Image 1 (cartoon, rainbow, N blue to C red):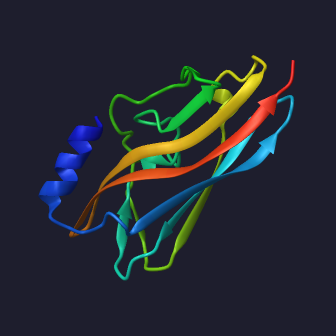
Image 2: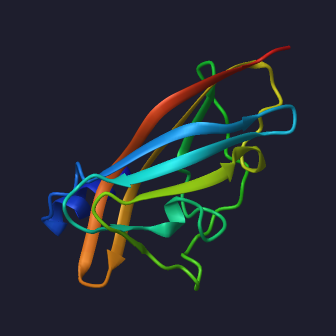
Amino acid sequence: MRFIGFLIAFFLGRDVMASLEVQIKFDKINSIGVGVNVFLFNNSNEKVCVNSSIIGLNGPFTEIVFDVKNGIEQVKFKGIRYVRLPEEHVDLTLLPGQKLTVSLDLSTDYDFSKPGNYSIRYETWNIAHCKGMDTGVELKSNVIYFKKPT
């Protein structure tokens, strides 16, 4: 999937690789669940198109966008994934300097019941099509960590 995203970005012929920055921070960590805030920031001088399905704005994701590990063990995604984009899917346009924040409860899609040292990273391709503007860029966030005691 990542290679396909690279090819799309290459053939779009646009230099958008440094135009979209992503960061994640914890929103909550408690016995009930783990929530994160995803921050997308357009740090370019141009409008950037964002595929809304990769940030959870239209319900379930079309692909797995979080890399969640307990130590070195991959935590399996247990959530719902769309095979196709939903009918109400709309790509978003971020203006230069504009930030978008989305709060997500990862406990609905990942099992955090085991004790251990967890790491979470947001990682995907933004393949989007807005009016007169296509975007193809790999998004990788910072890594955040928490420890769940026994």
